[in-house]
Structures are given as C-alpha cells and as structure tokens.
Image 1 (tube, one colour):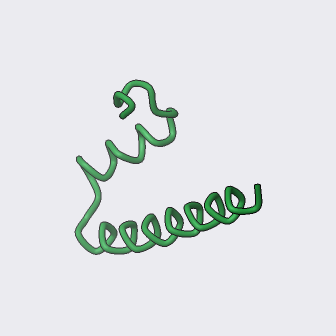
Image 2: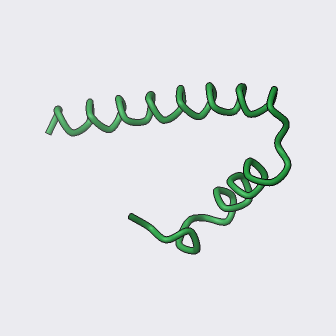
Length: 52
C-alpha cells in the first residue's frame, strides 16, 4: 500500500479536506460520488483485463 506522501497532490488535498473541514452533508455526497467512481473504474479495468 502506498504511503500518504506518495499519492498525487490532488488526492492528498482532498483527503485533508475530508479529514479537517468537510461538513456531514457533504461527506455523504462525497462518499457516494467516490464509491460510484471507483466502482466504474474497477469495472473498466476488469473489462480491459478480460479482453486480453
């Protein structure tokens, strides 16, 4: 697993925002959006891998 310092700057900023400043209502929206995006990316990579 990557160390926090090895992540791209945008990810580090987003994680810090979530940890320090994000209100509860926004956390729920972010969680849903991130989950959906990660799921789509995984499906895309799996589909690509199965084609090989």
